Length: 109
Length: 116
Image (cartoon, rainbow over all chains, first blue to last red; front, side):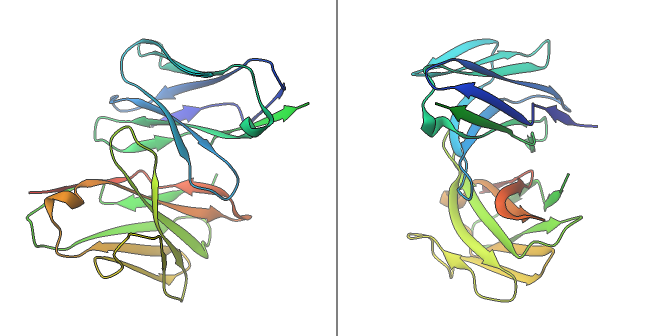
C-alpha cells in the first residue's frame, strides 16, 4: 500500500532550528510537497522537490533522497508564527497526491 | 485516521463538456467540506466551502455557476465543472473537517483535470 510517515508532533524553541522528517512508500514518484497549515486555514505551499538534494528558500529548506524514500523540511531561526502543522505530500505515478498526517510544530519562547 | 476519498483521480474531457468530481468521507461525517484548486508549484487556492444541506460559500473570483457544488449528505460533496474550457485544466483537491471539527482537515488525493 501507499504510506507516508511523519512525526505527529514536535516542540522547539524560538530562534532554534528544527528538522521535520518524512518517509514515503508510494506507487511511483512525481514529486514531494511540503505545506504549512495554520488551524482552520488552507495549507500554504512551501516547497516542491522532484530531484535529489537540498533546496533552500529563506529560512526554510527541503531535502529529498528518492533512493531512500526520504525528505525533510528544515526550519531555521524559528519564530512563534511558525507554530503550525506541516504536511508532507507525494505525487504518485498516477498523479494522485498522497498526504501525510501532518506534524504539529509547537514553538516555545 | 479519517479517510477522504476523491474520484476520479484523472480526467480528460473535451471543451464544452461538464465534469463531476466526488469527495467522500469514508469513516466519519463531514458537515463541512472544502474545495481547492492548485496550479503547479503554487499554494492550494480555496474555491468554496461546502456545508451539508445548504448552499456553498464561494471565494471571491470563483464563478458559482461554473463550479457547481452539491453537499447532499454528511459523507459526500461533489464539484461539477460546467462547460469546461482549457483554462479550467488544473489539479482539484477536496478536504473535510475530521470528527473533531475543522481544526484538522483531511485531504482527498486530488483530481487532475485536462480540458482539450
